[in-house]
Image (tube, rainbow, N blue to C red):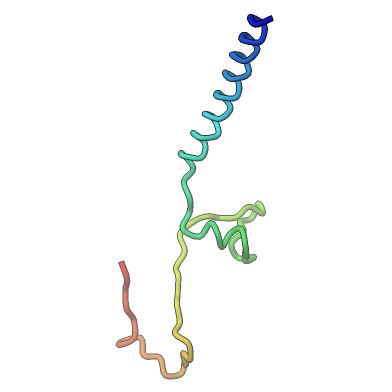
Length: 83
């Protein structure tokens, strides 16, 4: 009886370890896009390509201060590039 339980525990442990290792490797090798959270929570229609899949290309982020008035904006003095 003990041999059967030992063999069964070994097989179950091997299978569970294998499946856990596969999930861990998939988790560690996943590359995240900078805007993955936005793609999942609020996908805008312009993010989709012709096939209906989200295009995870390069995007520009624009942050406007509260109270921003586009009429008073001067591109010569108000543009700040961040690296």
